[in-house]
Amino acid sequence: SLWGDARPRKSRRNLEVDPVVNQRKAYIYAIGAVLIWSTVASAFKLSLRTLSPAHLLLYANLVSVLLLGVILLFRRELGMALPTNRQQWLHSAGLGILNPFLYYLVLFKAFDLLPAQEAQPLNYTWAITLSLLAVPLLKQKLSLREILAIMVSYSGVLVISTRGDLLAMNFSDPLGVALALGSTVAWALYWIFNVRDSRPPLAGLFMNFLCALPLILIYCLLFTEMQVPDLSGLLGAAYIGCFEMGISFLLWLQALKYTASAARISSLIFISPFFSLILIYFLVGEEILASTFYGLVLIVAGLVLQQFLKKQSHDVD
Image (cartoon, rainbow, N blue to C red):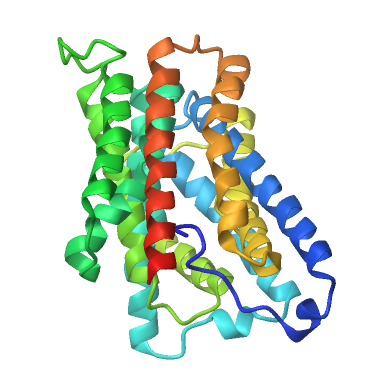
């Protein structure tokens, strides 16, 4: 599963528990993560009403670093998270440039330019981007049927970005669309290079975010006018830092820890973008276009088909 690569090993204690109980816990944790992911598009859009993309990233990343640090301290794993040599520091810094620096900076700018209902589904194609980049970088191969699944997803991208006017090919905001799709490149590259990371996932995420913090601050000082956020902007950044950049990751790791198969819970992820549209309608106040819904259906259909084809291929192997 694309979402099961960071799965931690189960402890002996967890293996002794009734597998039905473990799977029930996995579903609870997974649903919690999915519900959080469903809220972030609205949180991004609302926060960007008072904060610039760079400042939203700065404050959210700071909150995330503090939260992850406290969690690691509580677990007595903070010392293990800190790099012990120059190579490990460089590795953390390199991954931190991809995520959170480039990924969220580009993504927030896309949300600043596009309606949330358009930016969110376009960003959801990161799994397709991951498959495409895995061909040259990981020497993986795509079957003809997987290529067709990818084409189905990207047809949904066209429907959303042209607002259903495919013949005219008149994009609603070309730069915003390019940024939304570009953010998936940074996210996919992060996970490709993260495959070789031997650190515990939570410790690795903490160090990546910690190393990115000075870079984000320097970027804000050089290219923006520093601003103290108002209460709504501060609360939005705190929410994104706590939940999108922290707790959702922790919940998903717990779900992977308890489930017998990542495939059992990964299908829950496909609920997120549809539930997100409902929240965008009620919280952000956007009128959901028919083209957004139909485009999202095509994107998710392509993703589901691709996952099914990969599972079939693994079963044959």
